[in-house]
Length: 331
Ligand code: SF4
Image (cartoon, rainbow, N blue to C red; front, side, top):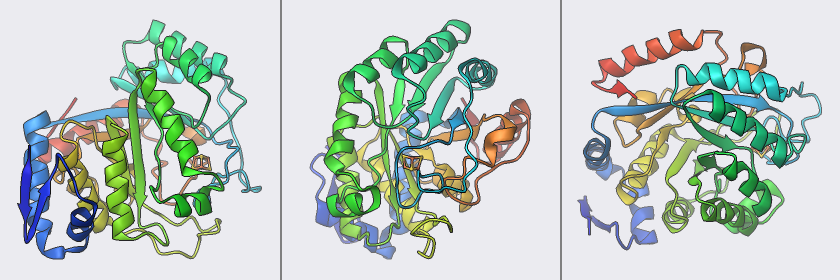
């Protein structure tokens, strides 16, 4: 049992209480203690290691209409692209020369059947010594099974918000459908990556507390927690961006609740200049772009994402130097 006394609050991480989590999120006087506790626990779990993953965004077609997303199906002006399977396998094999884990991410694009995706995963695993993570959205149990049997190791599917009403207003679909997909993924033996956004319009600290409890309940092994960033072309274009500092607090609480969970400094948080701080508040993972240069600008889910044309090895060396300045080492 781990009990943390933070200011006037006592957090029991075996039986976390929603009201206490919400109070901690809202109480600025606990920040320094909270960040220190999260960093101490992260170091106890992982030492000074930072796990670096290469991410390939292989298609920006998407059947979904998530209200915050710059490549949702209603964005008729978006220039769409798809990488063909041979090109994707080649890009993944190249990325695996630099990174131990390659993440294949796309919109929910049914052009890629489960069999096609399984073939891609199988070919990558035959040619490269790397873990393969998929981030391709909701599919059936049988579809996920094909991908798992082909050798995919991990699967990212965030719940985005644990409030059913807010979820439905943003996605036009039920939260339970998303949680059901997460449970299918987990049941097949994938390492499950969940996560959510901080600062969505209408979100409260109580909802954020419920988001944290959802990570615990669904037994995620990774969790991406990033600030909401308004994309100007979407229905939420005029909304305020999420607060990076609050995002760090929620990230730190996630570390206390899930000591062994992999927590990236999300790309959205990095856009807000938060990478260094996230790595000192509980995060242990960095994702780096391995998408071929010609597609980087087009994967425009929110503004400000890194679309620089820096070769992977150079990008990795630069990151290693930045990490070394923080006393951290890339894995
Ligand atoms: S957030 Fe993902 S699933 Fe939703 S519209 Fe964007 S790419 Fe599609």
